Amino acid sequence: MEQTIVYPASIVRTLDPARPTAAAVAVRGERIRAVGSVAELMAYPGAVLDERYADAVLVPGFVEAHSHAGSGNVWANTYVGLVDRIAPDGRSWPGCRTIDDVIERLIQAEAEIEDPETPLLAWGLDPIYFSGQRLSVKELDLVSTTRPVHIVHTSGHVCSVNSAALRSCSIDASTTVTGVVKDAAGLPTGELQEFAAMGLVAPLTEGTGLMNINPAALAAFAQDGVNTGTTTLTDLGSRSLMDDAGVELYRSVVDSAFPARLNVFHFGAGVGTVALSLAEAAERLVKLRGLSTEKLRFGNVKLMLDGSIQGFTARLLEPGYYGDQPNGIWAVTPEEFREAFETFHAAGLLVHVHCNGDQTTQLFLDTLEAVLTAHPRPDHRHTCTHSQMSTTAQYRRMAALGACANIFANHIWAWGDQHMDITVGPDRAARMNATATALRHGVPISLHSDTPVTPLGPLHTMKHAVTRLTVSGRVMGEAERISAQQALEAVTLGGAYMLKMDHEIGSLEAGKFADMAVLTRDPLEVPGEEIGDIHVLGTVVGGRHHVSNVRATAKAGAR
Image (tube, rainbow, N blue to C red; front, side):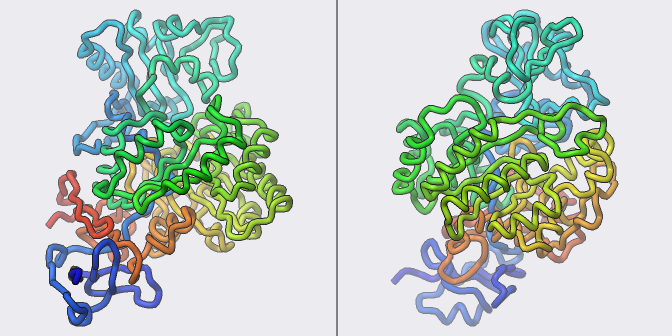
């Protein structure tokens, strides 16, 4: 007889409305057998008591429905972002607070590269933090005039390169690709916006960075999940599924011992040339579903429509950007988007669409309505992901069309001050990432990090949705705050629902996978400002125990 292991805790938050709290969880094999009191659970046949979590808080494992496995890869490059970050291996990287800090770190990194032909690769930059200063060829040539230097901005939608990189990729005044920024004299500044322009320097980053994966990247990505209590991750936009070698990479790494569940979305449109036709890709994805396991899921699609708000490449409806900057860049034409959406929808696939600006959300909704009219399909759960500027009317329409919204609450903290002061102004910023409005109109929501754009960490994401505090301490839209209970539901059952996995994960109920986050404090019993400080001891995934490699601090409630 297989043992039933009973894990007492200081409290168990189940997110099952029939039994919202319990004293313990009983696990048999990979699944939950029951929740309840210790006495109740010890009465099950073959029950064994395990008190390793007796002083901890158990909650459903967090579900991150918008992340990127390539985030495990970026840490091989030099981090130059503003905020302090912790790598999956536990190393702390201090932020670069000024452009001078960025240049100094790059000079140090360049000196450590022995091969003169090897490009210097970095990530995490965002010039909007530096009073409008851009990182141009002039500044990057201070690092090197002979070695190519390539920095991906934190949004993933812009990069900056030096003159050596421009020369090596034949980018000059005659280059006419949209997104190649030029100065008053018509010369490239070194800033390349969106994927068509960024693709010109792709040879410098081949095999590295956000859009690439390897076994080490997948392992680091999963460990980041353990460190943050995240038991289900997404690779929202893989370009590796259209060939057998790419599929085999995922299958060989994401085995029964892998410390997270991984849901891989094919990048169907919006990131450049695709390997197969839309019809061929849809047919292949339907077949790949048959290779899915309890840990690894195939058969979903991501489409991308616009860029980033802080990079001024998102598409906005009137009145546009605060400073009347030009509108953003479409990643695909509306006609191309309709064709892709319709093809994947008609094949029965789940589609998540990148929509930062409200003009983009409008196109998503118009297209969804047209596609559903032509191809009715119940319970599709297509998702507007980011949904940063979606309006009240658009949320009402999402509810009517059965769409979900995966809301980028981390932006409130990461760029809230810039959104109020620079990008869209205080009025529209107060309406951004409108979680309360979405819930009020019955739209299923989740909250996400888009890691590595912002750090993976659902507890921090909860905090941002609950407090709506910016870095400077201002509140960005008090009326859009939600409760800690609503935020916890969003990062557990909410994410599970829009991945069509809520029958398996997202709450602690009999029959579901034994996926849990192990915390030092109860996120529903601490002030909203402290939710992000709660220390994660590790996770349980399918009954297996995994330990965080991030040390607790006094602020995080170490015990």
